Length: 437
Ligand code: ADP
Ligand code: MG
Image (cartoon, rainbow, N blue to C red; front, side, top):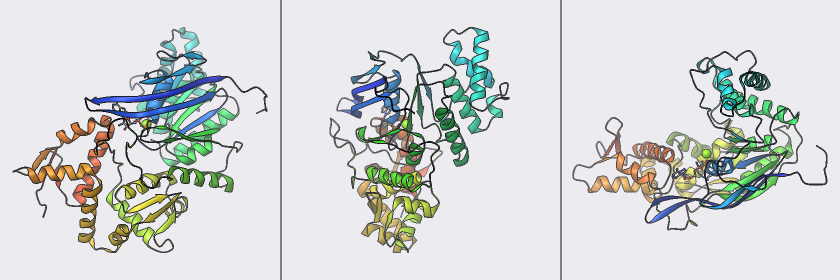
């Protein structure tokens, strides 16, 4: 890259965007507030944030698929009003048409734009070759591995030569090795100037991925989503994950993302937050106890640096953050400046026997997970001690998207069962106090 004097032209400017979902008469769910961001030609930028912080929502706004409640998007200097021309999107798992071959799936993007047949074929073949699928033109999606299917999705996005490529967690559904190959392949193409795009905006919750691939990282804060800080990644490609400077940057971002001790959900939302507006992350109780035990033992004795802990457990660092956040939610641990520290309750849990652990967990659930408490209260009050899951799902969907509501419900079922706070019948989709002492 040369050090040009003039800054490169702006592709996208997001200005003071706010996104609120209207839920019921009493409250709006504010997902994004005061979001500003600028994207220039020639850069690859990461939007890094926790699950539920509004990253996907922002991508849809940038693409013009979703009109923000307030604020606007400038696309090449003009106010965006409807889907932007020259933007292509890749998702976590690309919806390919099973009855179409690789070639036909890739050509679809061009067909929609009225490109003539011969030209379509030529360009699709070039995109398929570029992304490393040469020879698989006539294969069908079911014959391909997950990684190859994701490559087809990428080829379909690239074939239109978009100015801006938007990627929403494009590697997170792939296994570790496949994901890494695809990341490095993409970055190689990008560094060699072979990707037919001007810039890339990539959503991820994976810190290392952002540091590995991007020129700039926008760290996204939650409740409501906004850009909390911006970092330039100074390392040339190809980057080495083991380079001390690389590690340091990952650590620094960790510290940044765990800065505030206990995040108060929706504290700044317009309406008073409902206690139920708290998406739960799917973290199992076994893995929670395992982590607390490790933390309590040597060499940590109750406190660890998250990246160091991740390395010693052979976790991807980013798998550890949701786990840490969940322990924090339950007040078993505190996250601060990149460290995780066991609380007094966490220590008691580790020392307790199985029954006592369940009691401690149940107490934590009732105190800190309003949904769990509410389910138990309803069951206690009902003469037959039964309640259908539907009503809780409906209630949750007033505060979060159906996907998040489903995950949250699944999680509370698993936690409540472990704690013997309630039982759950999968068949009948019903909570009860059966077999609960
Ligand atoms: P991320 O991509 O960072 O995980 P999302 O943008 O998907 O976050 O969602 C942000 C928040 O907005 C979540 O709390 C989610 O439940 C909520 N949300 C997303 N889409 C909708 C919708 N269509 N209706 C209501 N709430 C939604
Ligand atoms: Mg998302």
